[in-house]
Image 1: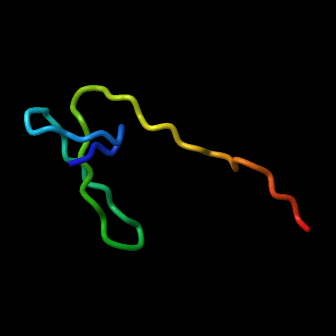
Image 2: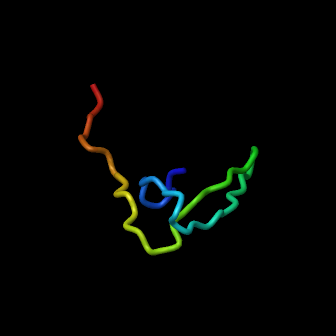
Length: 54
């Protein structure tokens, strides 16, 4: 399994939580996260480069 928060594998001896994620317009998903606090994966929230109109 892969932790949804940090994108690292969850080993067999590590505790984890199962979190349901409900979809508004479709089926939901089951997410797995470490019980211990882990560092979240950085997310890009803006375009990497401006591409102006022609």
